[in-house]
Image 1 (tube, rainbow, N blue to C red):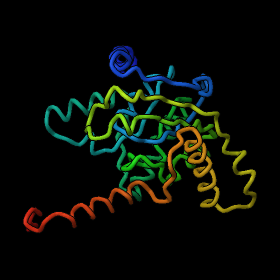
Image 2: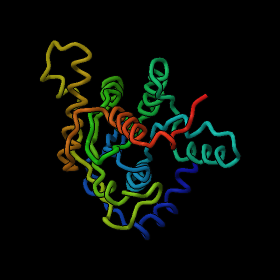
Image 3: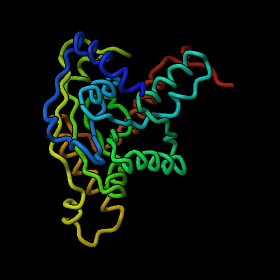
Image 4: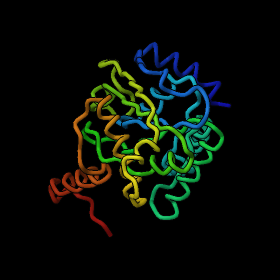
Length: 244
């Protein structure tokens, strides 16, 4: 309910300040389950993308966002839930199964599920290796996957933590739907891992074609860990916090 009430007001502000644009809306089915699979460059993606789509979009969000105990954190969690962001523990194992179940519930209702196949924001503006959750959702729900490219978001956000600059203008490019069955037809007799990877790679190829991003062979989460380790190692010994 909060989503439908807040969306027009939020987007009125967003359009007045940032004037984002979107092309290819006709590629999003008007009804039935569908997955929007987008590159992920900034926190603002989760506003600029669904805000310009006529249908309501449900996103999976890190459970950490909802775990704060302060009044402000609890209010933020309530607002996020109202905006169709679902808390999911992404630590792996049983948590991964919970995430899959949450997404499948959205699709089983015939709704739109938004997902970032990279799993986290790109730390360097490149398009990183996709995780196979997007394929699991699509195959289990027999839902088409619509590739989406956020363009200009990384440059607009550079050096800022929360709000992107007004320039360059952020553009959303929506591509033609992908039918997972057509992808699997090119891999007859393949095992499950191969099937999931084939669909995921097709999605990432389509996103790359739309966004024009340089491809990276690694997962974004691995790149982030390496960068944090390099930054920690580069700090003078006297500035590092002592652990007890």
